[in-house]
Length: 204
Ligand SMILES: Cc1cc2nc3c(=O)[nH]c(=O)nc-3n(C[C@H](O)[C@H](O)[C@H](O)COP(=O)(O)O)c2cc1C
Image 1: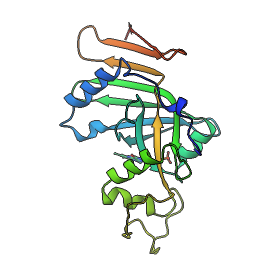
Image 2: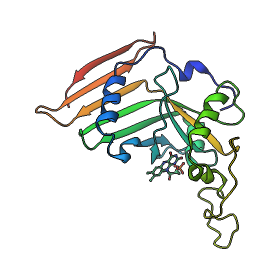
Image 3: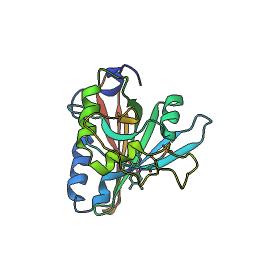
Image 4: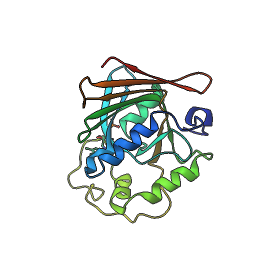
């Protein structure tokens, strides 16, 4: 995205589903994979596309999930065509699923408004994670002899390369399913046009 539209990314106040998700993250914290979710997008030609992503925390003072990705990756073209996504997150210890759907934007090096958030996300990455942004073009045919092969080390600095994008998913609809319990429980939360959330139990 070039200059950000904050109204797309920021909804005021803590959404009612945030406490349930915070509790799930806390209660599943001994399982490192609890910080991975599946992110679904729609390709430019209308196919679903789904992949695993690491949750990188919340954009401060918002209900917006952050992630990091490579500007050259397929999901970036998907989001340019269809700027919406759904995260599907299953917590194995507590046996609950969250599906979080809403608009998604990518913050790249041309964005000024969210440049500090992008920089913070870059600084939070390990050296190994930063290296990936210097790898050859994702999904291009692998050149075995390339000195630019994924194994080659790059000097990674404090300034994020142009390939580095911060992703912001702002849920407008959250579906929380709890398998534990008899009967199971399911809650649906929706963001209204006036910025308020509604939430209600629904049948599993
Ligand atoms: C455990 C795990 C974590 C991953 N985390 C990320 C991530 O945080 N960001 C990312 O762009 N890709 C991540 N990936 C790789 C993606 O699943 C995917 O292969 C890659 O982003 C290319 O997807 P795309 O072509 O649909 O854009 C992860 C893969 C796995 C298995």
